[in-house]
Every structure is written in C-alpha cells, then in structure tokens.
Length: 481
Image (cartoon, rainbow, N blue to C red; front, top):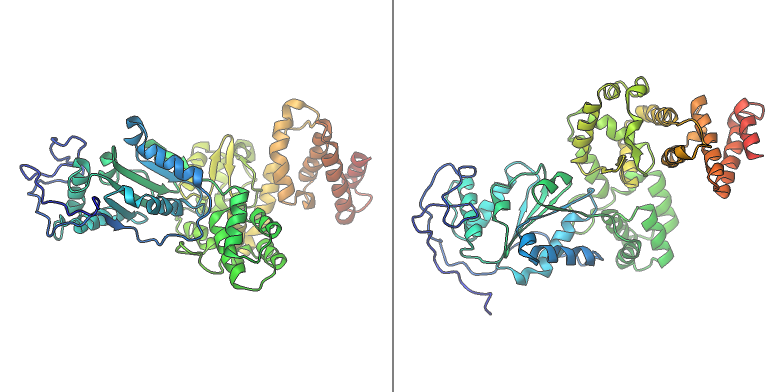
C-alpha cells in the first residue's frame, strides 16, 4: 500500500535546522540556540508511525458532531487549517477521549500520529524528542535540540507529509516549543486542556457534557441490566458528565447494587462512591480528577473560593455577590477579595485554569458533581461556616422589591441557590426575608404553582423550627393565604 512506504534519506541543504514556517528561513533562536548538522536517519523509517499510548475506548458514545466538526476544521479551507485545535472544558468531560477517538478514526489519513503528554514542565520537549527518535533523527543526549529537529521536519514536510500531533492535558497556553507554528496544510496539531485561554493561540472548542440520549446509551452499554428509565435517572443525577457515567456504568455492570441504592450513595456519599474503580481509558477515578487539582493548589484563597462556590447551587453564581458591601461576610482568607476586586478576578482566572468552573456571562458555573466532591473534600469543621457564608451573601444580594419587574432577573438568579443550599433552614432574619420575597417574586411574575409550593414548604418548615407564633412564621402564613 502507498502509505506503507519507507522514507528516503533526506537533506536540509547546508545542514542547518529550521523550525520556521518558511522552508528557506534560518533557524529560530526562540527554540534552538545553536545550529548543527542534521544527522542522517539512523535507519529507514517505516511509515505510518503510530504513537498513541491510549487503547481505543470500546464504549465511546456520541460526540459525532464534535468529531465531524473537528475533522472539518482541520481539513477545511486554508484559512482554517493553519490553526491548531484546542479542546477545553471541565475535568472529566471527555476531552482526552475525544482526541483518542479522533486519532483512531483517522489514523489512515496520516503518515505520523504522535501523542505528547503535557501535564508536567518539560513533557512537550520529551514527547517531541521521542518522535525524533522514532524518525531516527534524534541528537543523542540533547532532548531540546532533538525536539527542534523534528519540528523543523514537520514544518518542511520532510519524511512525513501528513501528520497529527496530539498534545494532551496542556497547561498554560504556549507555542509548544515551536509545534504550533508547524501546523497547517496536512500537518495538524490537536491540544486538550482545562484552560480556556488557549483561544489566544489556537482555535478553541469547548467540550461540554453529553446529551441525555448519549448518556443513557453509554450507561446501558456498560450495564446492560439497566432500563432506559434507570439510566436516565442516573444520568440526571450525574449531570451527564462522561467520566462519571463511565465509572457508574462500570460499577453497576460489575456489581449487584440496585439503582436506588446507588443513587442514594451518590447523593449522600458522593466522593466515596465516585472513588470506586477507575473508568476504562482514564488514569484516575472521578473524584480524584478534581480533588488532586485542589490539593496541588498552593494558594489558600483559591482553595477557599473553590470551597465556597461548592456550597452554592449548580446554576450560574453571580460574580457581584462578592464586593465592597460584602466585607465581613466572607471567611478571613477571602475577606481581602471584598476590598480588592482586581484580586478577586485574578483568583477567578487562576481557578478557571484548573477546569473546575466555567466562566459565563455574569458569573461562574461549577458542575454539581464537582460541588459535591469538593464539599466532601472540605474539612468538616468548615462546612457549616461556608454554608452560612453562602446564605449571608445571597441575603446581601437581595434587590429589595419582588414586585418590581426590573428586579426579577436578580431574583431569578438568586432563587436556585437559595433552594439548593437549604436557605429556609437559616437562622438569619435577612436570609428568611429573602426566602419569602422569592415566593412573592414568583407570584408577581405569574408563576402561581411554583410560588404556592414555595410558600407552603416555607410555612410548614418555619412552623416546626421557629414555632407557630414566630413573626416570620406568621409572615409565611400570610403569604400562603
């Protein structure tokens, strides 16, 4: 077959290595400090070269749109193909598995498919040097120079004309030792990262959770005994996160645990149940995907803010809940953020790089499973205090008039967090006031069934914890009437 050919020995003219986009340009000092004569290949290179350490996931489900879009962007118009692709998103959302599946599906379209792990400093150089060894052009004892040599070959399309290099789990955006500049035409670079800032150097594509139908299919593939309804219930509980679904399917497929018991454990012992087993194609269990990232943080304020957000609901958390008027409500480690909004937003950026939250218009979102694991990861002695802090911040964000339509968007943003955090149980007067104002807001906007349900549950709960004659209980009764 044509693609199973042996590369001929090659020459770069005067022997100088070049890593620039111009085949006739001199070497770039950015990547290699010295010029040297390129050694001839140590042996003829048999193509194709396959360097993907991951097995293909037999349970890979869905993502057809993402795969088709990725292929189109890599092979479409010249204006698009010069751009490397960067898949970013929450840890556990399936970025690596998407890249693995793309590599296997299109391995016949490339002379070289090479995988570079990039989690630690120096990994990119080591990975590219490994490719230089595979192609027989490595400089013995000189990893950086070997990496520059192979980048130069990729730029010039020498030895290989069609190639794909996947850089997995990349951190801070960079030029990847010249690799990004080599992309274009039939040479493709695919990056996976939790850091959305790769949009500055590549075409960034956010990878989201699975559609519900794909989640159900994945679960029933891994655990054939599940009914469609049971799989749907589990998918909803796990927020359609692929890594969690894979682990849940494996666990339920290998044990006799009933679905209702599994769901109870997810709700009550999230971190423990999500540490049971390592899913196929993943290096660590679900819970460790997030807790390891937190444990590696050396910034107490970043850890504190992550834990604080974990005690909100899974809907967008308004960023203006932290501001000058919130001073005194935050824990001591975070109180500085109330007086220095620049420090706050710097911290948000630092956390966003970890892939534990998504920045959206007006706030941040943390997946419900991440929240549950991080709540359990929080020392027990801090949990009640963080919950009270959340209630205090929500109460301070009360705009004050539930009958004013201009304020309804604000109440709509506060309501899911008030409900998710059990604010009706709060012993703070301001917190209870927000709860009944939320019922009034729902009534004012015409959502009578939801308003009635909230008013009923509030009255019933306050009757028990405050007493029938407490002023707030009487207010709740009046609202209900």
